Amino acid sequence: DDDDDEEEELPPVVTWRQLESLQQSIQSIAAVIAFMSISIAVFVHELQYRGFVPPWELDCANPAADRVLCTINPSCSYGLVNTTVADNVRILTCFPLDDNRGLIDNLKIGNSALTLWLLVTVYFYYRYEANILSLRNHVEFVDRELEIHWLYTSGLQKWFMLEGFFLIISQVPYYSTDIVINSDLFSTRPTVYSLDGIIALLMVARAYEIWRWYRGYLFQRYDSRAFAVRMHDQPMGSVLAMRVIALNNPLLMSFNVFMLVLSVGSYFYRIAETSTNPTSSLYYWDSLWFAIDTMTGLPVPEDQIQPKGQFGRVLAFAVRIAGILWFSSVVAAVKNSMRLSSDENQTLLWMK
Image (cartoon, one colour):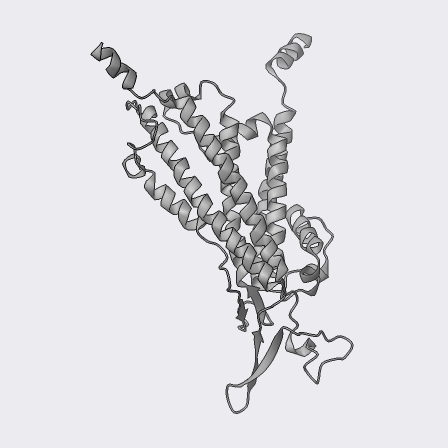
């Protein structure tokens, strides 16, 4: 009887499939949080979007500027700095935009809370991953509270710290400033970059949480995945997931890559050219059109939306390289879809 009581007190065994299901649920929460935080960061930047900052030659504060072509610049001003006896340099200084300040600070506080929630969620994701590895390495595991196999012993601590380093980047509440570059190294005119805009670009890296959720969803369709991983010691990582997508539906993958590069590249270009390009700073569609033109190589150049700063030109070069790789993938996908099957080859051989 005592032996029967001891057996009943043993904790229930947790299977690999149960751990994966719990881990995928955690990752679903992380994906939703990541999407919400990215959207809030972009919205915060748009609320304090400064737009085009004219050079001194086109500033209406310049008495020598053309009254018809000049642009009013209420949030920035040019100050005179005496560098030598003969030369005077105009230095651009910008002031914080106070419109919607209360709403912006509340959104930043909410996004900071989402960031902490995301870090905790990712931590539990790695805790489940550590226990899955223990089962994969044939270690006996009967602890349902996840208190035995830590990240350090399973080699996952460095990956969690690296991911946490990128996730902790967030817009700071009650603090907004602009980075003004007066050097000619980056552009022929002074350039202004919003700190919240730069942080919003860095927070786009949180989209990896969405991809990891989709990657887990992709592998769930394979019922024998646990056996395959044990036999071949091949982790179900991002490279394998992309290969699976490319093999199953290469045209769909090419379309997804195109939309990803198009959306991210156009928004990056909008921020990079916001202070130097009057057209791209007004309408997002102009930045989107430039990204389409650059990525596809269409012979429809628009002089008004061409990059004026060095950052915009570097970004345009990167988008063009991505467009070449995308076009190569489309050609390969079309070629693969037109390949004859074994039955069709046999039929043609019999016909000959």
